[in-house]
Length: 140
Image 1 (tube, rainbow, N blue to C red):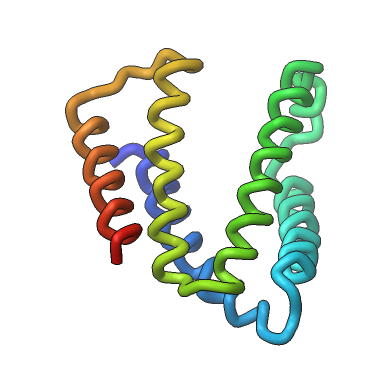
Image 2: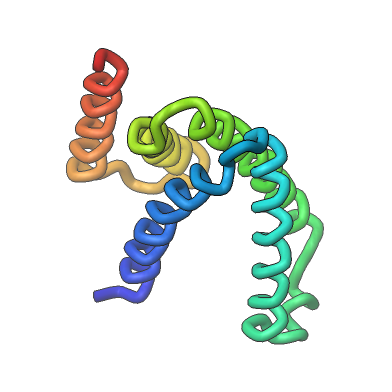
C-alpha cells in the first residue's frame, strides 16, 4: 500500500476524533473563542513538529508563490474552521461532519479545473454517492 494512502486514512481517523473532542471543548464558551484556543494549540504543535521534522535548509526553497498559495490556503482554512466550529457548537457533530465531507466533491471539481487531475469513473461514483448522502441528510 502506498504511504500516502496510509497518511490519508490516519488523517481521516484523527479528523473524526477532532470534531467530537472539539464539541466537548466548546462547552460553556463561544465557538469563536474555542476555535481561537484550538488554533493556538495547532500552531504550537505544528511549529514543534516542524522544528524536529523539517531540515533547516528546506527554508531556502520557499519562494514567493509558496507564501502566496499557502497564505490563500490559510484564508480558506480559517473560513472553513470558523463556520465548522459555529456549526458543531449549534448542531450535532455527526450531521455537521457528514455535511462537511461534501468538501470532497468541491476538491475533486477544483482539482480537475485547476490542477488538471483526472476525473475517473470511481471518483465520479464516489462524489455522486457523497452528493446523494448530502441530499439524504438535508431532507432528514
